[in-house]
Image (cartoon, rainbow, N blue to C red; front, side, top):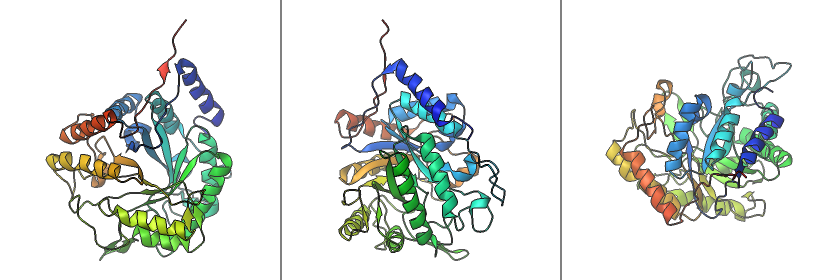
Length: 385
């Protein structure tokens, strides 16, 4: 394994601890404000990472979600034949973990795809018939590397969407095995770490050219649970609705947007009552909204005034729901050209902010002052004597 190994990662964090006193503390009963901005935070220079974290400070962020794409952290991912020695590098994530800690923020990692070619059913990088034995080995590597330093994991990104897990007809069975193995090994390697089920896309989609693109989340959940009961520490979901107003009740009883979040909480209550999907103590799962935002460019783009008005309202809707533990703004900094088709950013590439960012910042500042949301507590510098 390249990058910081467990020992050096622990040593680096220990060095930070020696230079500071206290640790980040977040009120467990208050909703977390979170962000995801993998490009600037993981892949870019310390200067860009620092700018992004300073913007996160203004939003009272306590959690940073990062996806770890399997194929991007393993060597020889294009090889159809599994290498004799599989080597990983988590260097960018290690650096982010240390930088975030100084701001009083914690990471939560989604162990995701695409899978390397040697771990798929068609020998290509992607999500086709993931080999669950190889995925389990990857989970073990991630959990051991970040043991005691990352305390929350999501398992695969949008497994009900064809781009991430296919074929859709087999996705529920594959995900059940992937999730069950991940739960088992993360809990064995780091018993205090929490594991989130789902990371589901919000609704079913169909293309006349391609066919079915996704399965509605609640139907997907029921199909997954046919293969046996599961335990989780929470349910992760992406309640987007790019084509309608914030208060539009998206049709279909198994689709779940922000306005129809009660469908999800009701389903989670039912799953718990039937002992199909529960917390370790047998209760219904709380909800983590691990992606949200309005499009800043592209086909479904909304104007700055619209986003400035409705993004804070969306966060307030999440806060008003007692089952929601986290609300996440997906992207701060504008997406690069290759990802322009999914641009929900609220700042420019250089970090310049406009009405939308300022409106969310004002909302977060007000709610923090009212003690309604969790707030970051950076470690205090130790006094020198």
